[in-house]
Image (cartoon, rainbow, N blue to C red):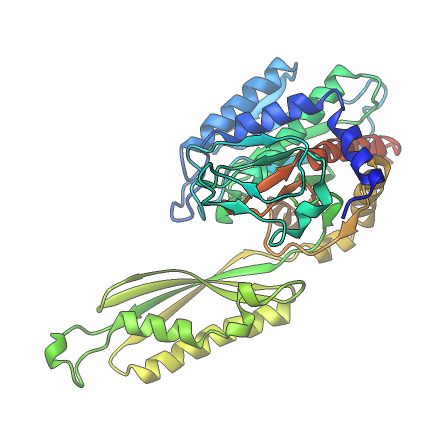
Length: 430
């Protein structure tokens, strides 16, 4: 339940001069379809991602940014020069991704601004088919009087990560219009295909000058993420033997039944819907096929290396158990690494995390650290050698038709980014 002080904070953030342009940017970006496709190896995996990336490049140029590149793989990197006399300050990067997840449609998105939220159930569509109920979404109770951006229930909203994109663009706009805000060199980075887990595969790392980076791809206000899953994907091919099912005794190996048996042996207590916090899981993501051949993709997630080793061993053990059940069939297992927990690398550079915590505090947030039950481009960039924790955006219920965003949280994210660049400016390069 809100107290008056919290409502006053919402009102202050909603009344910031930049807030209307922040909302306008986000809604405009959210309306653009940018869904990525994990089945496509090319980067970007879908041509629609180019539309937003090109728009952002044009908008950055219109703001006065001249050092900018959009390469053949849709990676957009723009550089903001340091304030005069601050050229020796270390460069940092601010990063967000342009694609949205394919879990729910991201086409024909209809964002709606709901002002002065009254705490009641929100009808996303006129018929009331899709409801955003505070009883099922307790975070709503913290936003009485706030302005919210919601969907019409037919698509996701795209706050993951267009809220982050809008917040970075608004921060750039603020810095360029207010030269009195002293800062060092900045790199603005927008990436494709984060949702496929392959978005950093072709990232032009050698062109980056930053000593640290920050993804703006988190959730509720104050949330800072410095630890993520170690992520692997298991691909399984089930090879069966086909014969007329009326004469199948002793002769048939049904690949569909093999895949079903495999899924049935995955521990239900270690599924995404049964775990939270620092507990990992197995997630059967997609299955297809027929009697002779079927395929299955399973995501493996764990925070610890030994936990991931156990999960990989379990996948192989279940595959052998299925082969024992279906002696005329076979199972082929392929394991691919996606990203690793970024905590170890971030621990080597504690100032990178401490500065974002201090920036959030200065902005008026109450920062807290939580694990990412997923991954970000920052996890991959950290693995590549540039420490990259994750900052909140004010988005909720990601990858869902019930996705919503808090305007005051989004404004607080902008103020956190401004404080962050000011903090890095306080210490010159040694």
